[in-house]
Length: 446
Image (cartoon, rainbow, N blue to C red):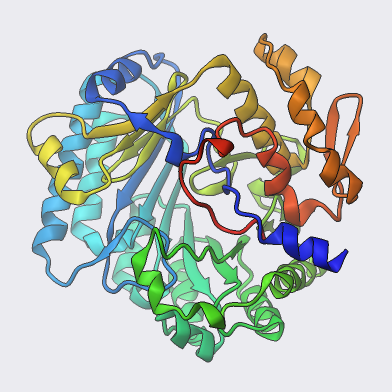
């Protein structure tokens, strides 16, 4: 079984933050995006994602759409384009209220306090923002100062996520990101002192020179900060996609079995400390909304991972950002120059996307429920969507996983076993009709 587990852990499959996944997007122009925006109902709940593709320095492990920048000019120029894009989108959208707002990157705070305030003022001018809007931002703890924290509290940021990765010095050196525990502790304290109470920590296993003991120690130190949520992602080594990852010696990476041990070690420490395990790699305090959503079967998954966000439409702003609408997905130009040219020319920067078929919608629902609930009632999902799909042949493909005790099928209800939870992406991949079409390479399953 050990050898089988290692083999399964090394299978390359998507993370399923969307379905179909981004490698299967094709050309979609601004006119399609414009029509989808105008079709948003007046009473729709909206989610906004603002992508800032800049960092002070590029970490070796990073898999994000970002680049290192040393000068202020490109940052200010990009902020100007974001303001213009907000007004372009606002001129097309049919209606709706913003219930979720997420700043991601990159390092969003690199915009500076003044530009963030200007952008938030534009968001308020263009959209109706709900009084109880979940307003979140991703932060680098090395660059959190009191002035920034005060500003974030003033504009209503209610949750901040800190990139931690691992607290071991030798691991930090290997990934090109030095930030001792006291740096993270000080950043968390500064935010809370200024009124941003809800804090998430993002950590990783599978990093170069990282051991199971390193993971245990980092998980314990993370708990000392009493975060509302902890995400423990498996490092995705994709140097063919992110060339700077070639700075990491592949021989220094833990093998499949050690990655499994690291994942289990983090899980055991966090769960034994009272955190609720959420899906594949998230953990939440019992008083956090994510724990409530998981308990109620209302958990969702999008490009930010596991979320309570059930908005009718997700609007992506900035280079490479992806939007989700009833009709399908749209993605802005991934290169900053191409994005900026389109927006400066008064045109939406849409470059890629996909219009969903009835089969896509059903498979997306099945995959999301498997990823979120570790179970899916196929007959109920088919009935809810009022459609039919040739998924019976996919059920046959579950047989090898069922034989290994990773999944059970009972009256067309799929249940991932406790032993199968680390391999949930493999279970979900059975229903991915695009996976065999040869577009894109993916990270290991565990």
